Image (cartoon, rainbow, N blue to C red; front, side, top):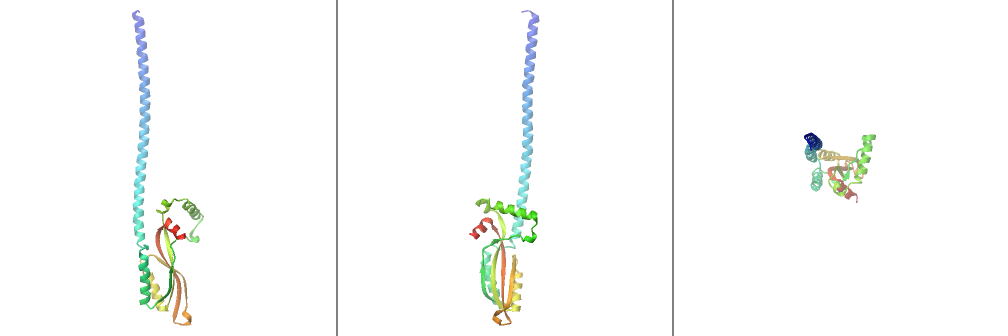
Amino acid sequence: MDQKKISQITISVCVAAVIAIGYWTFLNVTELLKVRNQWITKSHELMKVKHDIAEIERLMSFYNKEKAEFQKYLFQEKDIPGFLDGLSGFAQSAGINIVDMKTSKFQAVKVPEALEDSQSELARRKMTQNANELTKEEMSRMLTLAAMPITIKISGPYESIVNFYRHLEGFKQLISIGNIDIAAANNSYPTLQCDFTLKIYSLKTLEELQNNRQ
């Protein structure tokens, strides 16, 4: 084989080698760029997740702080017997006779219809529908404001009844009074008979309220 053919073969092999190396390099660079882009994307996703976690932690901290502050004005289950005993004790010292006092189970507080617009009504229906789909575990964690109605019948002079209501207004915990009906007790004025409904408030889980209905 002469020198010319050897040169041509050598050049051909070199060209083929250069092409092969260039193609291999191109594939590796392409793959490297792909991996780099994926890494950048995952890094951005990770940063977003970290930001979301930090925001959730901030909201949870705010929620727990607000919940603790709000609960100062609500009744705990352990507070109720002491509250009722204190009510009876004050009534006795104020010259009020508690004729009857009946407690009911806690019930979820409903938003008055007058305060609902079409959007909030839609949200309420959606929440009610979703509540039916909640698991028992989810219902055991979700809290809502609930009220316990206490129907009370008292008798006594007008001034003593007024002082009794003022005593109720002085409680730190949230209470409300409604359905007040005052009349002369067996036509023995100035002794009056007063019927009313006292509501005390607490935070209850959806599971507790559901059990109350059963």
